[in-house]
Image (cartoon, rainbow, N blue to C red):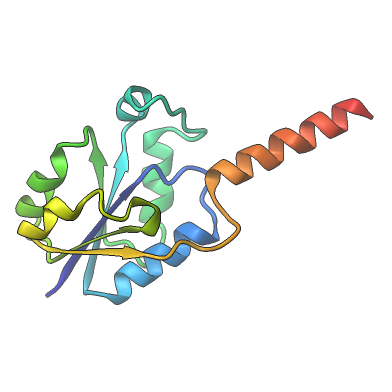
Length: 136
């Protein structure tokens, strides 16, 4: 059995998230998704719309995802790879090179992101729409 792992906040789920989860699952038999805890997001200066528990529940409902675990800090990746006997680490290409140190423990793959979509873009679009509506 080939085990794959990926990491992210997975807030405001969109087609880009589904695409990376689908492609990651196609690379193996078992997909683990580590999602940033609310506390870890706060340390990163990020605020998710959905709580950790809600994001976990949403991800667990996706057919490509076999297991969801919390990400509490940047340093836990090596421990996770070892603990879950991970064969391949997968991230979006915007992180290219940042996790190459994991190649000592497993294969590292950076997948192209889906063009034109991101949680940041969704938040910016919603803010712009609200401002335009307010200006009318």
